[in-house]
Image (tube, rainbow, N blue to C red; front, top):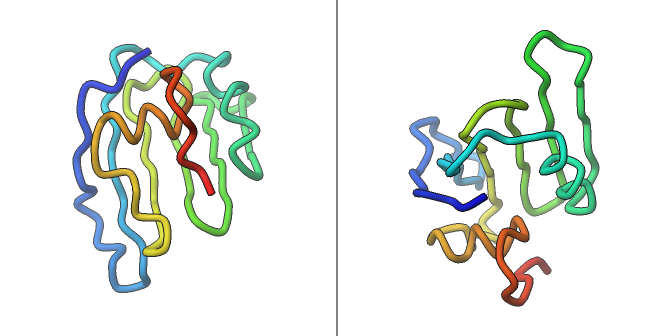
Length: 103
């Protein structure tokens, strides 16, 4: 899976010190992807829902999306505003072999 593009979220999160990004993926998120990202933080994965939902959170970021969707949203705190380029996001989600940028 690759990230085709990143858009700043239209939702205004900056007032509370966060910036959201929508990551447009080359294919739909599969269960294997969600399981691979489990180590990025505390995970909620509600696969029993009609539209399975996941949320991974830590002090610096929140990653959320739906199984089968080709868009993933990442919210980053001001202290971890590193998801500004496609390459940084690929590294963050472990989609390439480069060094991990997570703190």
